[in-house]
Length: 365
Ligand SMILES: Cc1cc2nc3c(=O)[nH]c(=O)nc-3n(C[C@H](O)[C@H](O)[C@H](O)COP(=O)(O)O)c2cc1C
Image 1 (tube, rainbow, N blue to C red):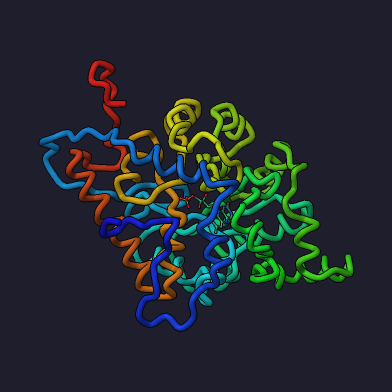
Image 2: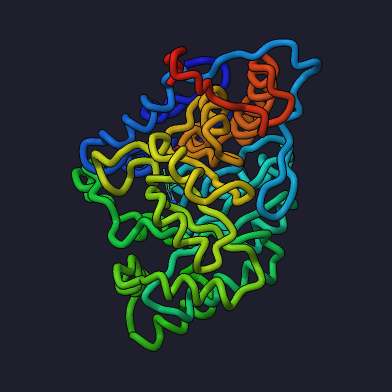
């Protein structure tokens, strides 16, 4: 592992100051993926291909700052929405949200966060997106959207790649019932308590009834877009035609992602489809990217292939799993600094200057 890279399969060991280690089942939940994890491995392997060619004499160092949906961030990096961070650190999402804000980076809060959105908004004044799932209970979707609007989140990220939850072998072997072990903050909300009372069910039973929702359609997502003033990004887009369709229904952009390999095992990797999605949406529409980013050079690769910014997933969880806030801050700072360094070596003054070599005779790709 290099200075700022993070090995997804092997979270940081016990570090000074840790009072309680996350359980083995919790670590498997966070670092595992669907099936025998071939998609996760492919995401990482394909991003590792060396496709960047240094350009020289750019005349100055790089400035990695970039405009993303909702504002300007210091580098094209946001923390990906990842639910139940309380499995790793009792302070849950507030740790990474604060670290992102302090680094001038973005943070996306999961619909199934352990910390409530109000606490995250209060601790982290930086650029914040809210991820939502369209559950089988439209009142809950509306609640999440309205809460994000009221708390000043800058964008909504509607995740569309979970019609069913991926079959994750590690979780199946552990009998991991994540919502029982770590109920998300959503179950403490007023509309959720009302649902429990109406249905006469426990929080876990209500969650199992409403999520996931395989009946969700494009029209349902269009309805969410029509009812909010926030820009909406669709996350989990892998096919260029789906990307075009997202724009047709009013999405402000898309997130190319295969959920870090947690859904369909033996999928194509997300970096393999990125260029086609970028071409399909045309210039000016932001295409964000995640799944497999482990090193700052991987960020440069995704940017060179047309991503506006990337979402950092498991490396953040690796840093969180030591229960030391400074580890997350160091990770984000390290990615930011090393990305600017790499950009300068590649002759890119700004993120948008990064390109891949397109000379067919050169065989760069
Ligand atoms: C433990 C865990 C929980 C996640 N929870 C969510 C979630 O609640 N909503 C969502 O849209 N994506 C979720 N994701 C997917 C991430 O947003 C992101 O797409 C993925 O982690 C990227 O892959 P990588 O971690 O291999 O880089 C989760 C990922 C992990 C590892």
